[in-house]
Length: 448
Ligand code: PA5
Image (cartoon, rainbow, N blue to C red; front, side, top):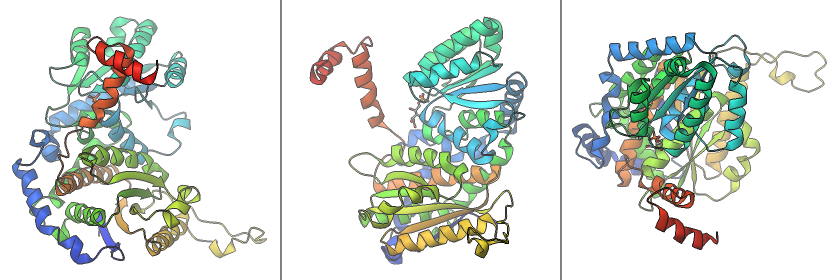
């Protein structure tokens, strides 16, 4: 049947089924906290009903802007960091050919920037853009995040030099708060096209707002189908669906039961390179939502079978504080068969006629069996195929599971107070007005 499946059969060597199901009542209470808006961080529950509240007109507006940018650009640079980039990157990578960047006739190319402060990366980007027809989408909820802000300053000046201020303004779209933040002021004063990130949607839960949907639409992906998938996930994970039929409840319960058994690191595993950035998005979602108050499962990620040749040894025999969640795709998008070779010099004829996907599936099944025998329990999650619908479904499913899991852990899943610590130090060291005293102390401490 066409559905997302969660299989816990490979965790019961480490945790009893009764221990997972013992969390049923707690999870049901948490479902109500979410739906009634009475839990911690309830000011940030805007994501909960996004799939059903987004209107056809809003989707059309996003698609229309995407078409305009596509028509006037060979490259679109998406400027943002954290929740303001990972969802779009995850969807675009999951749903595009692995070789899109090398395929000349696929335009526009989508490039992400402002997700680091690396001088070389951004200098190389400017060199590349020198000869390109390009547009910019700048995304920042707060409108004050340093990485995208300085990148945008550089790119804006570059584009204005290249095509003039008026044309540059028509090629820049800003996605930010309705009224607050430096980016809002700048966008209004320059007359940029803007989209709003709702106040009650936190960065890492914003992929189903224009933050994710505009870049995804620019990449030529069907955002209507993506939202349709998310809407189905919303129905399938609501409090009206019984615990044992509800994939978000089961996943949230299983990972909390494992955490209570000392499994403090969860590794999201894929066997499909296109899912690499979905893992990165998932890491931010769970890491920022749960890692606080000295608690939380550490979210890690691996790409298999690639990383079986680098991380496989540790997972099989290292410290036993790990569990895995294997995210698999049942149906590949292409067909590739291992050919027969009459000489069989490579001794691979036992695989002749088999599809790569069958070999990959056997690798997956063998890995899960080996790891669970080795003391690493494994939750399996599968989707039928990599399509906009199923990627949309996955986004909402993980968001819902994350919120339930955070509440089960006893934290506020919607804040991220710890993210500020490095920023305070960086501003102090860079001499930002208002940070002078901190700067003196820190310089002394660091011997600068
Ligand atoms: O989840 C979050 O809220 C953060 O990780 C943000 O997404 C990230 O810091 C970027 O913030 P902003 O969109 O305000 O630039």
